[in-house]
Length: 114
Length: 108
Image (tube, rainbow over all chains, first blue to last red; front, side, top):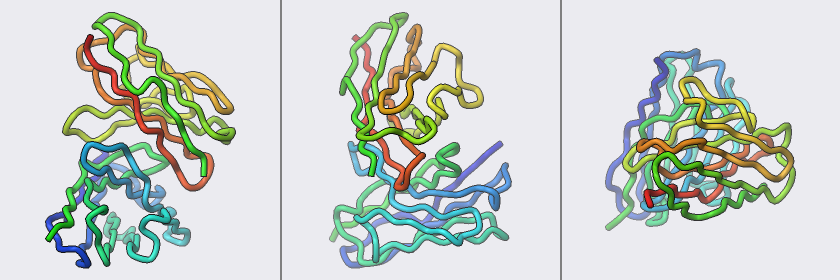
């Protein structure tokens, strides 16, 4: 069974940092490109970052460029999102999603508030 | 980037009725790389349709997708109680990947 399990969310003050993780199982993670997609409360889906299967190609949405860093460790079947200089508008559920998007994780909630 | 527009915003129907959801792209979607996702309250989205018309694993055949170029449609032939949800179209043919704003299918 394909599983993507996010962790690392929580409450952080504006300007703070968080590191999200996504653990993959049930498929050959190293063969898949992976994305981070977020959903603000009551809103739609917003793609924010992409990493290729090897990690050699990375893209970011303009809204997060320079503040978020995506990475992966294929040996650990894991995806990461380092989030710095967080703002109130970054409050959302963050999903990892494998492929183009074929599989979704259950999401982890990030709340940026003082 | 490719902007996706979905209509209607909300579709109010009864169980057993047919639902027709539209997704229009601001430019042609490469190789019909258009997907549909379903999201129920409090749950993560799940993939229904990819490649404009191919059902994902385990998706019932009452769900069908069609279209090409800039105009795409998701059809639910007979609504079951579990189908009342929000549906998002998504293109993955051109970077960045983009989503439509969603169509909510609710019970009339």
